[in-house]
Length: 164
Image (cartoon, rainbow, N blue to C red; front, top):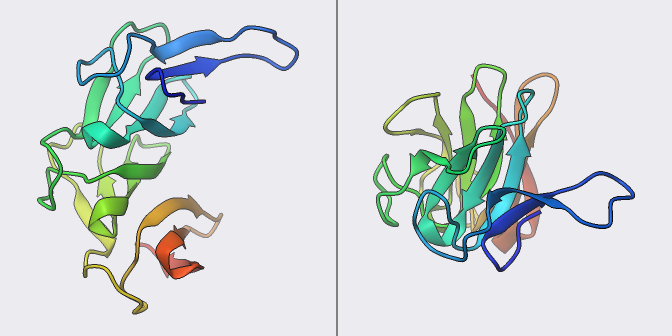
């Protein structure tokens, strides 16, 4: 779980104390810090991906690492394909491809592992109520058929998209 101290803490059921697995060095923009971490995804290798919302980036922390790796964003907030603006919900598939709800840009982006820029896979048509628009997409999930479900917070709805 993320907290206001810029850290991600893990623990097992019944544990009284957690173990810091990412961040924990106060809020900031260094690779060992977060500024308002919001969402988390843990892959099969126990790497931890974190939406670092106020730093406009997604960080990956390999198991046991003391520093994270920027895997998306970190070019300041903006709408270029190298940028994110308040990223939130995220998902990483078995190929290492990152999907992120780019809330401030009202879009969902895909970042293949190692890519320097992402591609817009849903919306990117600005804020709005149309079926091809969002008003602050906050989270997402995939079903077994590969359909993408996006929580569109500002429009009080969930939309489903068929993704290739």
